[in-house]
Length: 301
Image (cartoon, rainbow, N blue to C red; front, side):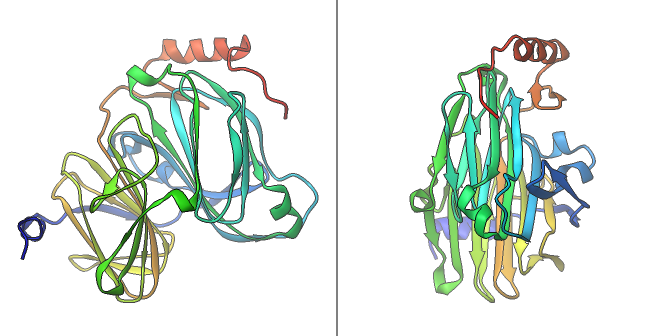
């Protein structure tokens, strides 16, 4: 047994705070039928720091159309939006010149920072043919020191993703941000964050280890998993872990897919009003004033 493996085995199991069932679905625009998990979690801003929001669009088949479905031009300041495509395709455009199309396995990471306008729609060819659609959008808070940085757009294609193969055919872990067992993800972040897309075969198991001080949570997108201590989670469940223990051991009953979130809390004041997330009310008022003055740029709807 290697020293590292021995240390992992000795690490205390991470305690589960709660397992949340999917809240009621609601529409964002006319193209995203999502469950907003954080709205169902008491004190979510503190417990999930640095993550601000998670909207999950479970698999849903859209009919073919020539109409544009999605969300029109709208502003953001002070945080990042991260969109994960699992089925279907999304087109993005923003006022900084960023934009592109993501399809299954791709991610787009938009840093709104000092202010940006953007729009998101079902990609045109996908809209015409219709079919299954499955996405996640995650909001990541920015540290105070970077809230007024220039906006940035990172298109992360499936081919660029870090991939860690699990032993004994257990599955794989796609690393979007951070690192897993020496495999790094392509996303550039402003604070320590790990985001994994873990895919387990039937009976496959995986372990993660995060410092107890850090936030840890996961969304079950497919399958049923055992989490230790008799706890189980199934498709569309969101699991929030306490800041007690480090090791998270997961075993899949059948094939399973998980979105794993981990991050160092910023521990800074959070004041959110609609599409703006800053540190105090004065900064929120300034965001509205700057938006009204056209300082977020221009983008055609």
